[in-house]
Image (cartoon, rainbow, N blue to C red):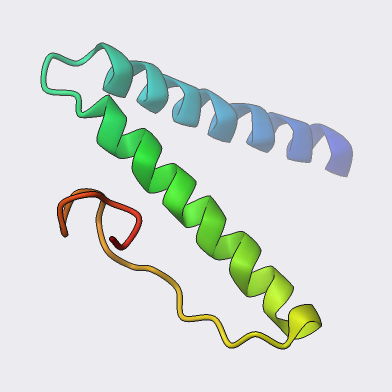
Length: 75
């Protein structure tokens, strides 16, 4: 019973996310490059924060929006 409920919930959530991705990519107002850049920046922040306890490096996540400072990725 629980596995069926979990599977249905995950399927619905992934369907909504997939629809949002397709809608974003095909929209005339889409800024696909900025969205990809933002996702990559977020992934980089996640990896740096996850590694910080192991490496001992103090990490300050980059919270700037891509191209907000001209080049994205906090440049």
